[in-house]
Length: 266
Ligand SMILES: NC(=O)c1ccc[n+]([C@@H]2O[C@H](COP(=O)([O-])OP(=O)(O)OC[C@H]3O[C@@H](n4cnc5c(N)ncnc54)[C@H](OP(=O)(O)O)[C@@H]3O)[C@@H](O)[C@H]2O)c1
Image 1: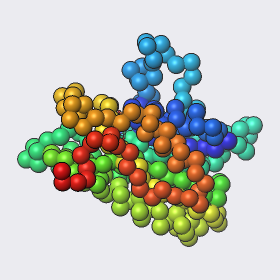
Image 2: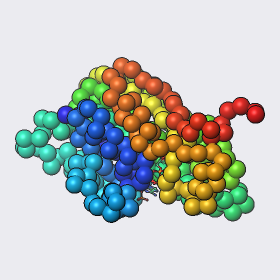
Image 3: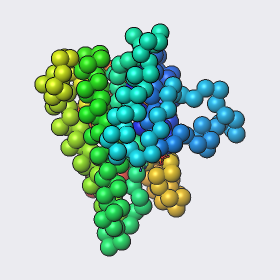
Image 4: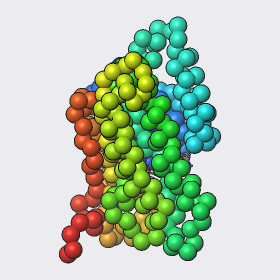
């Protein structure tokens, strides 16, 4: 059994990633961390609740930028396993997937407040930093390495108009990914632990995926003009990367609808 820590499970892509990991052939125990569990609009199929949710534990954190609260919830989770039959199997961390993210609208710069900019940077960059630091130490101590997958965005490669906070945050996430991938190559030194091994760190950049991160009008426009990638196609790709041996990395990849404009000049 391998253990995964996943954020964003209350959202479209995070929930799909949990489903894909669970059906990927590897035995994954998934700890979901977030401010609320997935709503019925995501979990129910044809109005019916799922027989089983695609994660094993849910750790509720009202403010994921609160590093003490995050550490305490995770420490508490691993501590609660002590003495149980599950200790040997589950007191470890093999994979972190940072999927939670927000854009807080698509406003022209004149209408973007510093507060909105700060929130987007905190959710999209600071939270992955806090969780990656925790994960690297735990991975070094518990299973000699692991993997971190950051869910970036095509916006981290090329901005859309009116996307200053979101684009800035996803470019910054790319910097975090690269810096962490170097840290992960020198795990004992960077985590100041006795554990050795390596942590493979990578970023997967989705293009358009239907979700509540965009307004209904924007979704309709993209449907007409750019198309969408199916969320399970993206999620199955994330699971494929997650199941690679830690010695192999896919540093950065983009999963997008084929006709979404990104490269080329017509
Ligand atoms: N959909 C796309 O076209 C697209 C394209 C490129 C990249 N992405 C990236 O994919 C990831 C998932 O997006 P999605 O499309 O699945 O969007 P979504 O359905 O809106 O889900 C967003 C997830 O992030 C969490 N989140 C947002 N703000 C948060 C906050 N302040 N504190 C804690 N959690 C917060 C949400 O939790 P709550 O339920 O608590 O709000 C939810 O779990 C994001 O990183 C996004 O940037 C999406």
